[in-house]
Length: 229
Ligand SMILES: [Fe+2]
Ligand SMILES: [Fe+2]
Image (cartoon, rainbow, N blue to C red):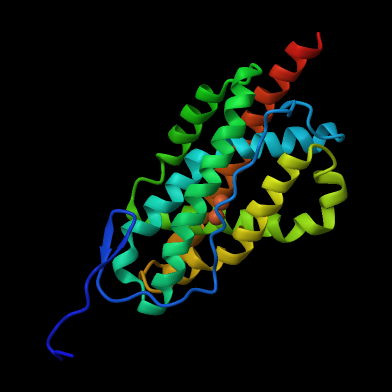
């Protein structure tokens, strides 16, 4: 082989990366769920669990786009052994968004203000417009989803007691979140962001997440009430 020949760039999304990508321990499973028989506002026997998971589902398409953009904007800092996991991370998050958007369309058809929720999420995430802050907010939100994914098996009998297609989507999403939770955190180590900045923006991210969850919760409850009365 010609020693001077450089390896071809590998394309991750629209971002060319110099080098080659080896096997990853993270796997993207292209699952698709049939929600045709789902009553999206009342798919769970637990009213609380149903509203909580629906409120979270409303966040994912916008949130996961933010995560992909944040990691993509720092990808040039990633060591070669992290690139393989980043590539799968992009694929996993894009597929999660696709399935949640499909479920969220059902919520929209059942009276949930999905456009308002998404506009509000975009507005809140816009405060993290600096490149550093985008990555910090991504790391913190990934840690929150990763923690939720780790807890899911212990809470499954309560959280997923209902329609099997929706329950299976959450199991699939949780499994892949557990696999890729390290990606943004590992990338952060190579980006030279100060600890002080991380704490400040990390705190703002947690506050934003709680406020958005509350906003979504109220939107879902309004739609439930409209159907019940
Ligand atoms: Fe995800
Ligand atoms: Fe994630």
